[in-house]
Image 1 (spheres, rainbow, N blue to C red):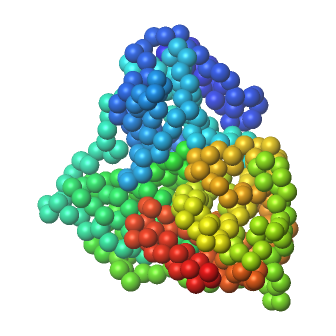
Image 2: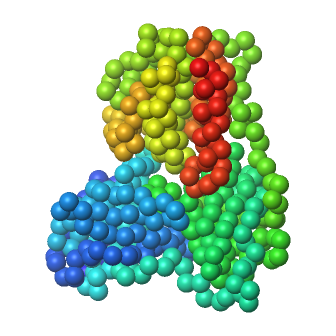
Image 3: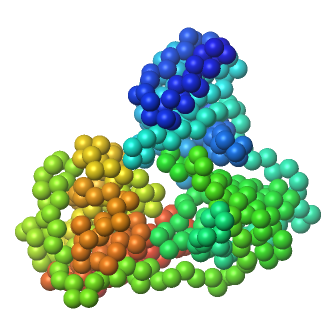
Length: 422
């Protein structure tokens, strides 16, 4: 790619970030070897110099290019790729996100990651290097080969200035210097994290198309110190942790509460086909109903939807219904409709998914949609309704497959509750 073209590319990217112009179609004359199959290491470059690293693999399938974004045990399929000359457009399946790049003369990629927010674009320069399969170089080794990072950690994350803090639990497993794990929090988890121990230095990262994370810290015996958490283009928190195999988070059934004197649920919203659906409809009467409070922007909602889609296939004939209530980033019905339809198609969802028309950031989202709740504390939240229409239980959050045993426990809890209601 010529210096002139790349300079113009960066100008375009900056204008997009400022929401000055619409997304362009970037085309460069064919100069390099093209978008090649194989392993790639990718970097998202933040202004503070902390690159968020991830990996993907490109393959041919049914006459077209596909790729898999790799994060520990997750391999996220991306099958909407457009190639024109040396330009590559990779539309990611969720989160209104895409990678736009050109193939350089040495066969690598340079471009930008774009993520559509409520009313603007988040943009980060993007590079990817062909033939690089590792995420981070491990560098220095410990004498024993086991650093002690494996286990359960009670962690405290703090915003800049220390004004706000949040509790999470880190669960990590290290083998031959490679670390995999996640952080659990009251609304779920931070999904699949992958990285290394480089001597006493911990490095972890994750990219799923919507969320880009980088963690750094030092291991000092039973403590983790000097932790830094970089998120997206500018997010930053510090964190520390200590090893505690008995560390616990608040009970997921205690976080979302009913208002005093709350009656039965009563709502009507349009589904993604613009049909009005009400909890009072005949199809839901006398049934056990799960209300899934979710959004297409939410990674833990993605994990829960994947589970509930299978759950619905198993339990629908037994008298169980599910209704998804979507709180999107915008009140624009058409945009929400498109995002949610992608979600529905990817997870083969057969239960109705309704668009509330209330944004995730609206402080009155509960009052406007589900006034029986004191608040919508987190996403996802699942309301279990018995055959008589009474709210039996409310579960906040969802521990996805990146949490291993906790994922299995969460699924079994759902089965147990519904079996009891039936």
